[in-house]
Image 1 (cartoon, one colour):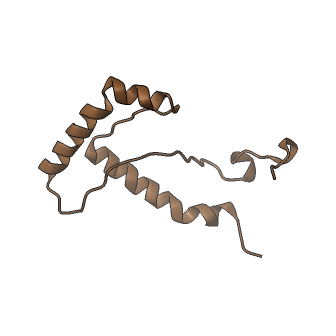
Image 2 (tube, one colour; image 1 turned 90 degrees about the vertical axis):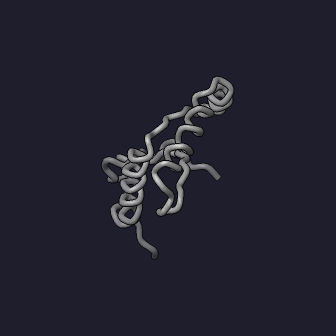
Length: 96
């Protein structure tokens, strides 16, 4: 059953300010993997992800590549993880 358009609200209209969610994929290695190995994996993945065949395949699915250096991805991942615990609390949702 779908919700009628007259009863739909944007996330901002529900009171959740600065709400942002998007789908993303990344590779995560165990903590003790050396920076040299992480760099090699990143370079290999970047070479493939920047290839025409891979980009063309993603575009057929309305997706795009946004490569992050390992240290940038780590900061992004930590920020994403920090957002999640407060999402339900900030929404005001509760079990009745």
